[in-house]
Length: 138
Length: 138
Length: 138
Length: 138
Image 1 (cartoon, each protein chain N blue to C red):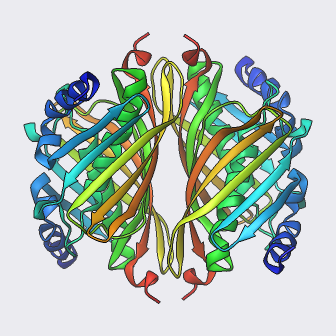
Image 2: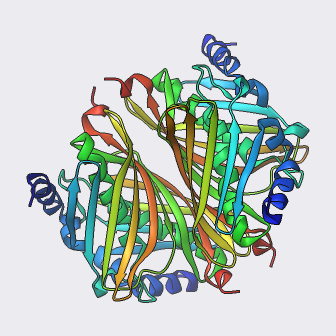
Image 3: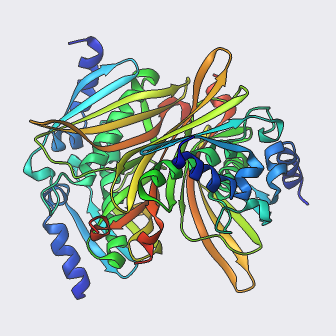
């Protein structure tokens, strides 16, 4: 495991809510990040699909990691998510990458796919703005 | 409690993820909904503030309830959230209302406030589009 | 007219596209801005309503002015708009205000109303993120 | 020229605001659309770059065409745009495609590139929701 991924994982592990949800950081490289979730019953809504709030959490976190790969310590200023299809399957992957990055801001996109024996299906797309934390202090 | 609020609560209670997070529906009336969350340690990120994913979950759910108060069985097509300030305090309230509603679509807005002994502070704002479920079947 | 409004108008007047559209800055104060448009035939789409692109232009510009009232020289990092109703009437007003502002970023909201003899109707709502220009240089 | 592209162009030509801006529909196929703009001085803002409102107009229109290629007569329910870089160059292309489409709603994405002698640069990205017009009548 790269030092960067190990660092990213230690940050995720220090987030109580991420531990509650059970997310795992599987890729953390300059310009991109991928978070994996093994879907369990407590992630679902009333129709048995993964709750939209879980997808929103994954998008928020993956976007922030992608931006953070460039900016360092950062926060999500905002994001937007479109839900495309019900999320079925046993695993979700949130793949985010940097679309443009400056010294203090990065615009990132994220695709969330559900993984089934038949392959991958895109279930949500998101885009958001990540800001370096000290960018707001100075 | 009104029949409408009781119905809304039974739906929320049938969402395993909402039970995991611990959200409570406190207002559900034609055109608006409010979800309350007693903040606990497992809602936090690494700096001790409420995780952005929790706020996104609250916005998603409150927007959907507001839209659903008009449309009936529905889903969130999309939403966007801006994070304004770190969420401190022991309680969060996500207040959503319908900005415009037709027979199949509603545009809704949501404000998330954190409640402290000193009063309320707006920590995030969201707006989104809710679609009636059968609107996509016909 | 305040010095601030006069300055804001001179900036708008230095934007060739704003002159083409015909927008007028009518309020520019700390934390808020309002842009007015006298609707003409060249603002319409094929059904006779104001084109969504005109509303998007108004939202973009009003959000930027609101943010700029706080940040100084700035640019729109992103925004999102929900179209609520067809825009009729002879005048549109885009009213934007700051929801939260730091030294380098501001989150702003905007409401676009159409003005008819019967009163005002909200035709679109937007929210966006404004960044100080030098925030991206340092 | 395909019948579909000819039809799409006739619609664009019936939009007075699109004629004012000078947009041209260059691709209109099932699932995607592309709008081209020859940049002129009246498209600029005060620093000489293309005005954000022009980019927002292009995104709005390209997203609607992409959705309309699937849904028929439709309108933009909402969209979000991130501005990535200043738009330079003599030509802009707004390329939109359908990410998911049902009978009444489509989620679409759009990339706007500026074309210079050195190649293409992505200057903005957008995603939005398109709704069939009669979807709101029934």
